[in-house]
Image (cartoon, rainbow, N blue to C red; front, side, top):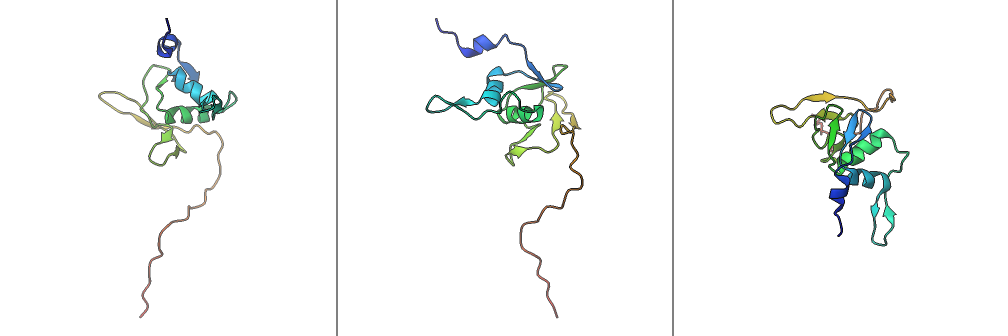
Length: 131
């Protein structure tokens, strides 16, 4: 009899990354090792030496279940911005609670980049009418 992969990996404990626990081992495996392509080769994957920030961001991108050390579930999109389709610079930790959502801004990157330049604005310049 063939067992489904969900039945096999269901009993594994969550994997700790930083102050968070990643529950879904299949999605974590895809983040680290990649996924099988059409020719049976692994495509993508960050590798074992990837940073905690990269793993959390890509795991969140796959909508994997993330909890804190106390077992509180986080909403999807705390580390990955689904609208902009890129990693958030400063993640927002939002807990999935039926009665309340607590927002706490945390900074994962320990490096300070210094003064940031103002981004170039897109669009037309305002027309100035001269008399």
